Image (cartoon, rainbow, N blue to C red):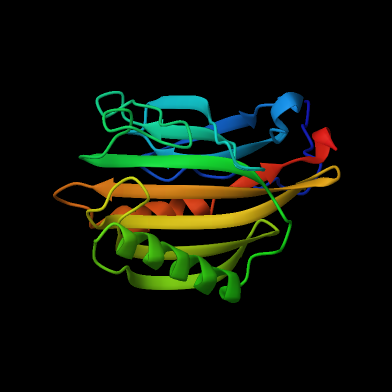
Length: 217
């Protein structure tokens, strides 16, 4: 008679992907000529986002270029805005439902509520310059997610491209790659008839975010 004896060993915790979400991973492009960040980000996104768009949103200002990674439905708007001046018809403005991750070189200062308040004042100034309503901030907080400090702001307002107010959530953190620092922003947008679940979906995604730079230092 043969007896099988199981060795007791610690069980590894297996992450469960929430219903309605899929696990995705994005490698930050390495473009030394543009000083684009290196590393990767993994996260859960709504399954309806079946398309990933990757491009460089170029600017003529120092440290202004942004590497962008957008999760969106293939049935939605797939335009990729770029350039210091963006002409009508070169960017999406209606029926938005998407998540855009951007990486831009920064000063390296850690996120704080003071930084959030400065950013909100800037957004308000942009809204006023476009003649649109002031931002309505629904919530703002600092959250540490898998060891990284994020500022998270939920609000209703316009953007530099779209004057009409709509539902948005912006989460910002700073990552360090070698001697440089990069501001990473996760921008959740919903400009549709029903956006009741945007904040909940954004929170689910944010809790899954892991940014890895260890292999790129």
